[in-house]
Image 1 (cartoon, rainbow, N blue to C red):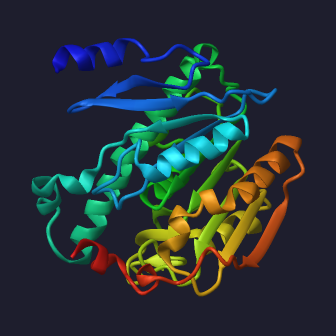
Image 2 (cartoon, rainbow, N blue to C red; image 1 turned 90 degrees about the vertical axis):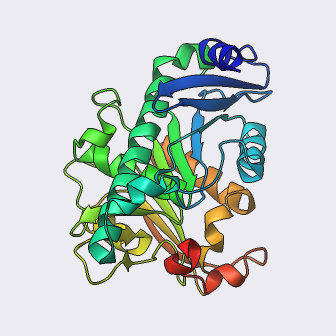
Length: 305
């Protein structure tokens, strides 16, 4: 088993241009891997999408059904798609217990959990950039996206990058994503998040009834909180940064897994960014494939009970 894992870490399973390959990008308590999906027909600009899975920082895999669907849809559009591991901090029950109880303990627990996921995401992106020629990726055309916990992680990474924070320190100096597209994302910050330098052009997609990753802010009684898409959009818009806000009225956390259902919107935004035409958009949308389910009424306490 150890020998097989070593081979995976040292060599991709498949050569460049031949489907999916797996690479080791970091060593933590165990090896962190990423899958690289190659398109049959590559875009002329060799653009890449780094897509992070969701699962509440306690579950999920880089090669689950949703990630595979996303990879197939986006490679069909000509993108190289990268799906990385990241540490699931809430699986470490002893570490979680060490943060204590109450809202203060909850805040400390989530800050640490998001921090380590963000560090791992940065390491995965840094690996892709360092091996851009080998993987057929244009470093100036790397888009970050994610679902739920993955959406929080990519939004947090760009916020940390823009503010020069340690969690993003493995990224090359001066580099920024071409775009960020969080599906039900947020940023963990002490006070309303600010951007010391410009964020990447961002499209937030979020359900207005989302109580798992709060649409506005959670918890409302602490300044150190998760600030959701609605708050982040206002901050970016006020500062004049290019940002789109896509609100799904009456929908909850179902939006987190809606990239396959909105792939044309995703690609439309990315094309706008690549052409330099993105400014600000605030849209309320509906889609017959996106309807309220049991997730609409679930909150974060239901998720972790």
